[in-house]
Length: 583
Image (cartoon, rainbow, N blue to C red; front, side, top):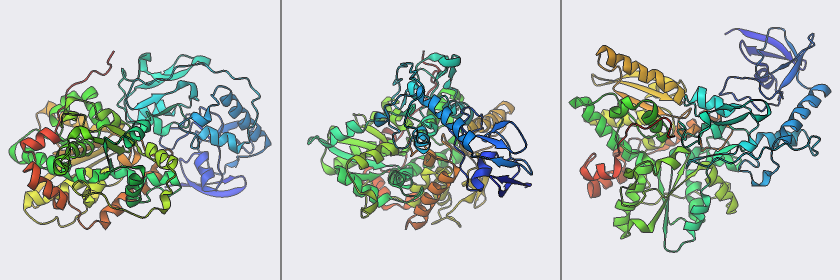
């Protein structure tokens, strides 16, 4: 790779060719302020706060979109640049509400942080608010266009990263606003509720629908047995709300804090991830060995399944019928656990802590989500919501002693915990599939490096003692179309499908980068969260789903065997074609 030599404020720095000035400055330990730029997205220089000077030129350029060049001599801070940036901020604030104390991004807002850094205490420009209504049509995402600063991140994420095109710029000039395409409601739009718009928004214009009030009310109800589950990716991200590094593994502390909130039983979604491998793995082996519809495509991600039903209904028959781990655990809590404890399903209030905003939609997506006669999952909270609950309850999270999950639905294998990263579902499935196909105790290697990493689409052929299984792993919705188109080409040509098994996750990096995780994620943060889950896997005494003793007990005492009639009733669902636009 060609390296370039330049100066940032007279500091020599060497950067790879193609680096923008903003990132070149970071390498010189110089921070250039910005609002519209995000490393996940192409720079488009909307806000103008990152302007810099080049010695020998009378022009000012925007550091996010200008490439570094050999011999360049950049000035990033001087009185004139300070004045320009401050004026830009003051103009943005003149069209922004001042209700920071009520805003869900209070304390984590990028505009608020810049205003503080620039010491803005006065408002030289009069307020020009537009009184735009809040959009709350979905069960997952809330749009508050009054707080939008028109940075364009959400539209770029929705269109370019996710390939959904639910959000776009409408109108012109001072009337420009971000809204669902065609100016329909978000619920009527193609939105898949992935929440990546909210995860990338620098302010409080897009956020998850807060349901902490419902949980607090249930915890105070003496007639309810409040039960909770936590997803794999939550344990490596929640600590960020308390100043810990991304990837810090806080599983035991989360269990302890949930009990302090008042939950009577604390279960773990990693357990039902192991159950998912039993159901989905059995389904795959049946199709693979008996001539069923291939490739089998994983169905754990509700944003992905929503996208498929809208954009690719020709793949409905390829989808695994296995529910997501969230829905499996909720159904088991209100059936298997309830029977063991002599409880009725209606007595149990099931709360799910997820890294995902689409999980809020999933719990009522079809009648199959009421397998126990009641809605199986009552409320979904994101990682961000749980962090706020712990803070408001005065829990000194970082000093809590580790506790363990409750019996029946709490123990998990290393395979269950890596469900939270891209490739994790595939790797967990391969570990068990190898054993089921060969009858051996474990694969030659427990780790399948071919499915790991941040490449958008990963392809591999796994040799299981002479049986070749062709696999693909895709994450970030915008990468999925190429995999599906490849299969469509095979169909059109009458060829055998080039893949046997495909894993898809809607969010970049998988659930560790979910739309309900702490804001500020980039690939460095995702890498740390991913490393945390792989560490959890490596530390696990049991690393294959089918060896989890509590899972074995579930099948021995209750379900009989994977894909049994009872298992299908509780743990499986179906998919169908949906309209792209509801209106």
